[in-house]
Length: 445
Image (cartoon, rainbow, N blue to C red; front, side, top):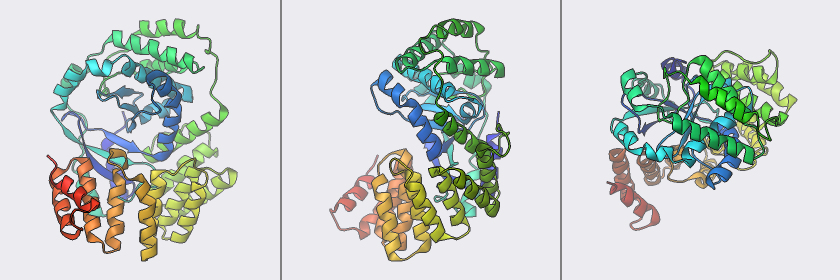
């Protein structure tokens, strides 16, 4: 298993890519690291769109990426799906990831996450701070001073009682069978093979890791039943879509996502030298180490080979790090033209660059870039932190305080949220929409 402490502390020491700390309902014996990255999240969203529609009748579902090298995924009592970086890293084909996600949706479809609710709630009574880090290049804007990052390092907790984990994670073979059958049915319905499910289960078996529905299936020692694999071999081989293959374009993007994980998490390279994937990993690794010129040189060459939005994102971040702000904005804008729709991380990076350049016009533009991404969900909480910086630059302290209050409110830091909301109200127009929002936050239970 990859050493989460080492990765996180090394990242802290480099003073890059730290995002924020979030209270998350997890056992006090275990704290997981959640990865935020636009490129990988977009890919997973595309993997799951058809599955969500046919399985759950919805267009999307919350999918989170867990920084762990084991081949695993799981669904929580709330119906949120968690995918390990190790699953993506070890998946040779997109279909392998897609089939595993179909299995997780199968658990939701069969209400397994609901039937485990009581047990989960008992487990949930013990809570621990979870660390969230970003491995996307546009995610460095939250905590950039050394002291703050050093403080984050003190909160890391991994491991814990094997007995407690095993007690909670009792595996239901009936539930796994039902989820497998649902996955095969859904994959067949969208015209795709379920062979990836079998391939991944074989890899899990080989690694002696268990694929589970539970909140925390990492580091388990149960052995995957061979009869389950044998049964699936017979079932999947009879699919009408058994021989359907992933498109070359999708495989290409899948490998780019794997390359990113390799570069940021310092995993062994899986690609032939001097391929775009190996070079992407190398550029990210150089960026991590502060070797910006080497990273920049590789990214410029990669962009000359083919244009890709997230190549521009990384190159823009490199320009930002070396204080080439105009080049950073120009590069980021070129990347944005390749996106189907505006993305949060691009907007945050753009806003960061504008606030660094300074000037009221630039600051106001940064606010306008962030406003479309405002909502009260954990996914977009970074927006409020960046907004607070922009309002502070404009000397609009009440709105800066209100933004910080919203940030802490979403994260569940109620006392901090109330304090900043109270401060904001003192400078806001009484009974304006902003004042009422601050009043609501101040009076949260």
